[in-house]
Length: 169
Image 1 (spheres, rainbow, N blue to C red):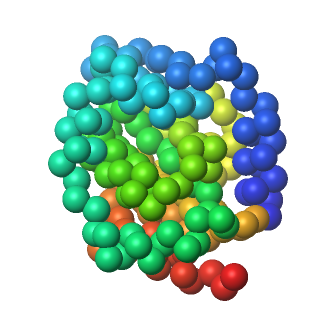
Image 2 (image 1 turned 120 degrees about the horizontal axis):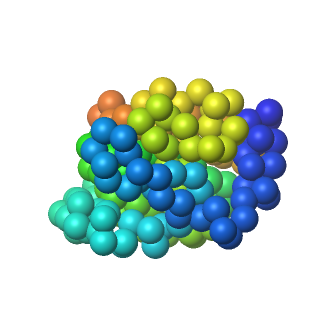
């Protein structure tokens, strides 16, 4: 419950001018998305090639994903990622393709970019204790039902189903 309250306060405090903020990475000298990010940011020149390649090449496990469709009314997602991170560049587009396939509304998906220190300039990230990216938070109603951290244990679809169906309606 406390995480939901933190997320509510966080999302209600975001301002448009803070959206899609770029921060120069000291290691690579490239610009990373940090803070609250819109989905459209993945189509910017710096990110578009890896995003589209992974998104277009990923094949959704439709048998497993179809079972998730009936749960959409009670599911929200928070995706914490780093554009500097190879795991994020692989898993975030794949995860979004699954969410698109099952019909998740964009208002039920939030994105937060972090730097190499897993900081975003948003205090809520510290409270969520993100250690590895990407971290996919799955919320059912008012509770955090689970997380997929860095890479799925089986597949993204199966891990997501296991989390969603582990919480009674």
